[in-house]
Amino acid sequence: MLVSYELDSDRKLTPEQEQMLIDASKQPIVFEEECPELTDEELAEFYRVSEKRREERRKQTVTLRLSPQAFYTAKSLGKGYTSVLSRILENALKDKDTIQRYL
View 1: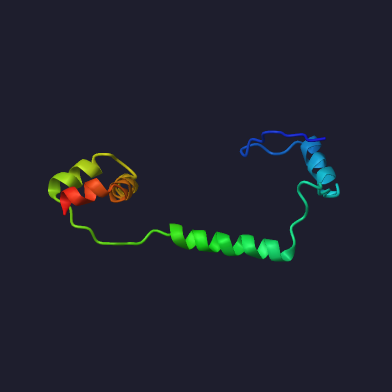
View 2: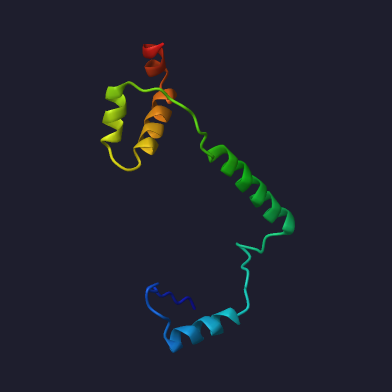
């Protein structure tokens, strides 16, 4: 039986909730045929893929010179404007017509 609760991190657990967690930790893990336990090799492969993806997503620090107009317009977007600029640039670089227009 699956039981779920939404806990408020600002409030302490009730004794009943604490006991439920203790009881749940004593329950055996039962793997189903459709979802078997992963082998050490499979877990290692997940880790390898995860590390590779993390490397691919790691942002690079660059220096970029912008016109004053572009800079102030971007900055007017507020907090996180550099992330917005990054997404705009990524999308523009995916569009060959946009690239050709500015070459």
